[in-house]
Length: 336
Ligand SMILES: [Zn+2]
Ligand SMILES: [Zn+2]
Image (cartoon, rainbow, N blue to C red):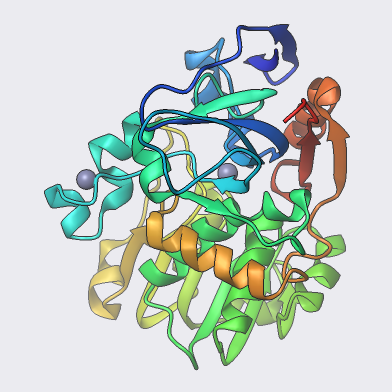
């Protein structure tokens, strides 16, 4: 079979690799579509691990089931989450399931951007879901990014009637806006450096979109602030816009060597909560799936281009140059 191999953002190869087989409890899936994530082109994260097999926003068709798999059959079209927590360790029991050792250890084998991939038994047990026919393959690749936003709003303490500030109007920024709107936000402000992205924020349900230098943006004081760019500059800008008693949530992963000077004084007296959200747990995934299944138009307008697997290098190049602002989906049609 063919699989995408990452060496660097500008060195993406399509290589031959033996197709995986399904061990007990596993399934093998033929890929239909896989989104490329901003994290797939984060060089500080990817390069030390290269060469590696990327791809985690996957939709496909079950082609083989291992011993003991009863809930899935050949021909099922599925969304597969790429990690699964154990559900019983102390981390899982206190809601930190994306830090569960099993969560960190599970992954699609050999990788999601392949004509076929095996899904480990713990993922099969909790995180492989059949898709409704009305939901197209490409749209279903957005279930995973939406699940990350579900976790993010939950961890930020979002509730109906809340006022929210979303920093960044890339794909995950817009998903946050749509989700906050669907969940009954009162007022949604968006701050985005690039004015050309403001219209998409407004179409997604924002009440207002501004650049960070706007006087109105500088005057913001909002209880729930979500920072989607992986940027310390965006975090420190946003920290000054959190209302007393509010929460700032870091959604984009900054690099291990980046530091951020801040005034604990401002955090202390205003009782600001600083938190983060990484990936998505089992419940976040099922919530995201039910949102998109109920409303297949929920993610309309978010995917910029759909290309075949053969054009992976071009898709990575475009994602790397546009970061969060451009969503690419790669498709494959290996025989099911
Ligand atoms: Zn992703
Ligand atoms: Zn666990």
